[in-house]
Amino acid sequence: MLEQKIDVQKGMKYSTYDGMFASSMDAFTSAFISAFALALGAGNLAIGLLAAVPQVLWTANQFTAAWAVEKTGQRKKIVILTATVSRLVWLPIAFLPFIFPDLNVLILLVSLSAMLGAFTGPAWASWMADIVPDNMRGEYFSKRNRATAFAGLVATMLAGIILGIFPEGTAGFAIIFVMGLACGILSSMFLTKIPEPPYSALKTKFIENVGESFRNRRFRKFMIIYFIFRFGVMFGAPFMVVDLISNMHAAYIWISITAAASTVAGIMARGSVGKASDLFGHRPVLIIGCIGTSLTPLGWALATAPEQIILVNIINGIAWAAADLALFNYMLETSPRESRPTYAALFWVVMGAAAIIAPIAGGLYADYMGGRELLGFEGLKAVFIVSFALRLAAGLLFWKFLEEVVEKREKARTAEVAQEMFRTGLHGGINQMLYIRSSARKTARKVESVVENIEGELKEAAMAVEEKLGDIERERRIAGGMIVSGAEKIEKDFVESVEKKRRKKTSAEGKDGKE
Image (cartoon, rainbow, N blue to C red; front, side, top):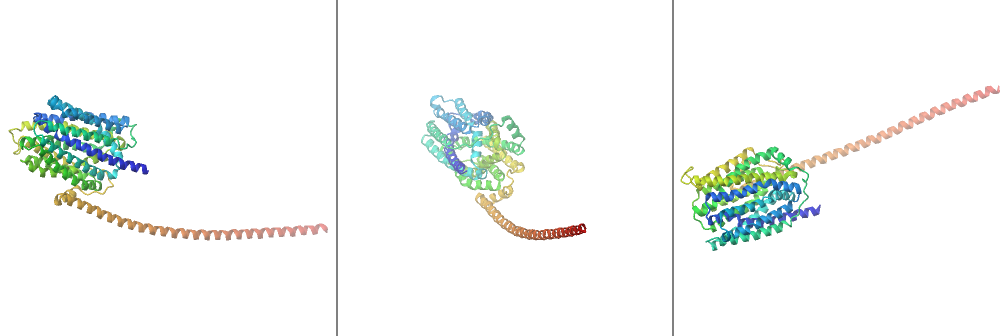
């Protein structure tokens, strides 16, 4: 039992290290892919395709990945192999401008990396769900996310500085992509150190698990609304860097500065968000986070200078700290352990489907709105307004239809948590949550004290009853002994009387015979 505990702690530690280097790789590579494409001459539609086409292959492989996990049970091997190979694809991407500077080849290579990386999702989610105990997920993943966010922040700032040193051409991009690849390899090395608990679903049927997931009412509602939310996110998100560089004419370093504002805010918020999620449930945190993220595209629509994006991204970082954590944990809680890879695959398929359609739709809509207005906004600004409306609608739908899963957990009503957060800020809202928790614990201790007193009185009463029953038993035995003794005396007297009469009779018969 102790060995299992040590393995779990070891697994969580190395999972954090893995996440830090994986986050650093994303910061060096994916975070700058749109800027890289712009340097190669991409337009709005090409940016949309760069975001969407890799998602096609990524999404298409989710069910294959889940099937592979349930067929083989080799989650660790699947994650390490596919993650490593998908990361190596960034080496030719780094030197693409010097070898074959073509946008179509760029889209093809990024798609190949995404297709291979798709296999890691269901396997990793199932693996980590077995490593991290249920009651620690919120707090652990919030700490892990803080660490990964900090690593990503450092990598983003370093990448921005490098691009600032090489502002012309694509040499700066080659350097940061190679650095990202190095971080990816280190991430894979830490994956090899994470223990893998035995997988318990080797005999399950993949098709049956898919059918079961669609019959799961809570999960089905969650997926429908989640699609709307992800569509809203991906409708505008790929074009924010484009707006920053093309419309606000910002230098590359502003990509890092604005990303850093979001990351720092997220790091500061994640600890409190994780504790709140474990205490009150993932539902209220999810709702507040999703509604909070809707303010991001609204801020981008209103912004005219990169300095204004700093405040927007601070709000963005806090909101996504809540949304990311709660969305993932809610998915885990609604999925049975034995079929979790299938549920995770569906989760990422929905995310992928939205990421396929939304960027293309956003790019086409941006081109269509060139010279046209939507509520006074045109071009990319109109795209951000639509993104804002979709995210807000999804958050309100979550509020209306989503149910909490863990019934035994203490929960606060979403409206009360949100009201306190907006009234006093996130810090005040969390303090209020912690005060509620403290009060609940005091009440629980009082109840426990009353229960202990009642138990003590019941024990004393039971002892008294037991003692009384003992007295009754002793009296019964004494009475029984007296009855037995009396019966024996009567029997003895009767036998003696009979024997005496028999002797007299025998004596009388003897005298008669002599006469």
